[in-house]
Length: 371
Picture (cartoon, rainbow, N blue to C red):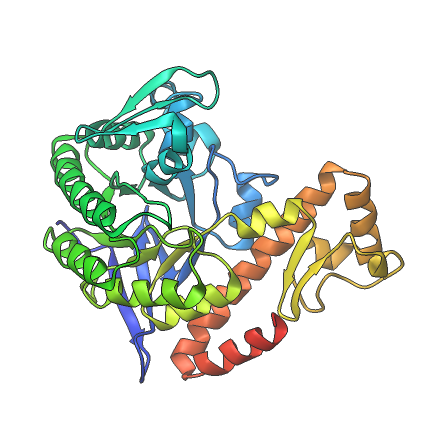
């Protein structure tokens, strides 16, 4: 496996929560950590240096979208993804399995891989586990995700078994392709198994047998109720090695982050803070609010007292509402900066609560705020 990229620095006295460090690109990144989503080599509405100034050192970009536009070969010729997007810190690239799943009728899955029509120009594209790894090697990301199949919530049990087995076979191919490819990058396997605890446990055990640098839990938050999501998460994490980072893919509501951190998850990503900012939804420790509401029209106060973000330090709710109502680009920039700052502060509070044994109290505080 090579030199470990993760160490646990504190374990909760009760439960499975832990605080740790990821070592990537010369930096130590404290976990649990939230990764802003930069799907197309940009965290929408933000300059890379602004994302770093908020405190982030690890972001996500997407193999699927970057291969379709502008192409990984072009990015490689221009010096790799870090130079291309002017981001000198760590990058995790999602393999594209979820994006292929979202294409529904536009795709065909086989043992070899997936064929689908580009959502941009209709061109037929073939993506295999080997090519997904090769694309990520060309991009030059620090964390490389295996190619997997994600199923719809309503998929039958037999399809879930077949899909899990296919994902495991694809993982073996990803591992071989990664070992034969360029130096650098850490391959993470992905646990699937749909919404069967038995399949989740088996998928986690068999994925862990490959002794990879880290592991992700995929196929969640696709329409299932929260209790079922947490049950499937527990079935997965209980069968993954405790000394490797665990990544819950696509999870990002504030209470989800606390609940999953309590169950031993170390890494999260989601479009929630950035996408919702562009739609006027603002996250605070008092709950989520909509800046478009008329009650903010004459409010001289900040979005959140004590928040260090640029929006809260310099602008009123009244002004921010005005920007949003006028569809000004500055609205997306300032609200995104605030939401990303809130998520960074939330992760800091989660880590401190784990250290002090107060995670339950933090959960109760947020549950009341977000009721």
